[in-house]
Amino acid sequence: MKDMILVTGATGTVGHNVMETLVAAGQPTRAAARTPDRIAARPGVETVRLDFQDHDTFAPALEGVSGVFLMRPPQLADMETTLIPFLHACQHHAVSHISFLSLIGVERNRRVPHHAVERALADSSIPYTSLRAGYFMQNLTGFLAEDIRERDQIYVPAGRGRTSFVDASDIAELAALTLCAPDRHGAQAYNLTGPQALDYRQVASILSRILGRPIRYAQPSHRAFRSEMLRRGIEPDFVKVLSMLFWPVKLGMAAKVYPDTARLLNRAPTRLEQFIERNADCWRRAEP
Image (cartoon, rainbow, N blue to C red):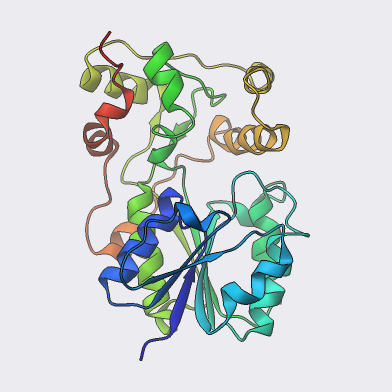
């Protein structure tokens, strides 16, 4: 009988796709979320409540688990009281492998929360794989979608920096691969990108062509971006994390295209044009 794998963030884009891929492979899966009733019920999946800010939820989630897909909830910035205690709980429950959704360049960037998690993983006795992802294409269908749909603009403080966008579905497929064959992926750090690097003016051009209306890149400063996000009522900690994430883009540090995604998937990664065509309805305005 195969061992149980715990998928954190199972209501999110990556976690949900990791769960689906594991189930399709016949892997016993436990899907965890802070509000597990939001996880769609399906055969082969247990659901459990997991809140990194509530340590009492750790033990029930980890009971009988051998592998963990771990991702940081975007709203959490303090790792010392959340994900790092969860790692200690993983050690206590003899988890044998963790696949952690991290960031490209995390080893050089102490300001992002993922750096502290990777350091704690390295100091632990748990074999792990670090999935160092580039910027998700799903940002366009997520927190940027309203600006594109309602204001015909992309509003991020990225300057003219290019980004090697990656499809989160490709990341999920790779995460499931590492969890199902941990012996082949232990003590590995993979840099995961898409097949091309584009700046946001180019992204706006692709959106304009596919949507059939002009989309512009507003190119705000970091100060203007922070002020606007706070004005919209976004939590200050999340605004801080978002602002930090776009500094490397502006400095030209997000443009490199790595071969790991294509090599591990044994196929070409998703191109941004494909992603936008597949999700075009997300940015179309409702008919009056």
